[in-house]
Length: 334
Image (cartoon, rainbow, N blue to C red; front, side, top):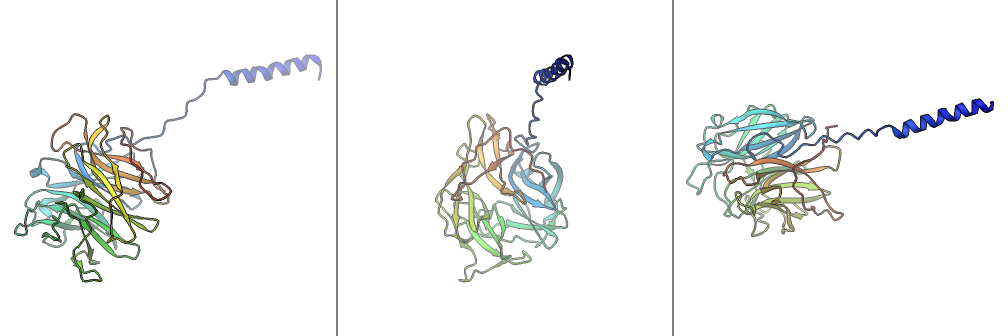
């Protein structure tokens, strides 16, 4: 190579290098976020589930009490974009319901979907109401009454029959946790969900109240062989509404309160509680779905549904959840 050609080649390399250095950097695309609230409108008491390779949320329609007469559902493939399925269960489909319905818990068994709910807000055993169950062929319904009467329609161990959560253990056993008025019970469900079964000791309604702070909103999940019992504390309309938990080696406990993991942030939202949990399939990604109140909004039924990431420490304890406006990034179904 001649001296002249060498200079030309060097100049070309320098120009290319300078151009590359001078080119403006392309910013990385921001991840798609769910934002909070994740559902449009007033919704509370969200039940979260995974059916047919889709995430689902079944919330209470947060309206005036007498107007809580139907449920909507929402589905998503990534936790960010949600599709509304209106009126999946309506009061007209349940002959014994006289007043409001709320607090869904939905499970799948043998290709059918079972929608457990609270209704009529009974105050004593002479009133008709309690926990009902409806059935459908698809998660989006329409659901129809299964029993023609409440599944649990009376007080046992002081627990008002409300805010049920249905849990399937690894051995195929089905349990239902429920309760209000400072008491929580667990029952074994028949395989067809038409009634309850006694435990080995003969007890049918076993009390598992974890702490004096227990109020409502029972939930259970299993992780690394241990049972996590979660519930809501405080008044559902007040700033002290929150979520606490306990861990045990059996679904019946004994449970002892470990601590609070979800509560209001005066800079974000108030009254954070009555939640559900999503475990994303094929991962160790966990999410908490809950309701809260917009800042400054005191209206009784103005509650919205939000989602946050839920994490654990090396001992399996649930770390405190930070509530946000951003929500969570997309977590597409595999």
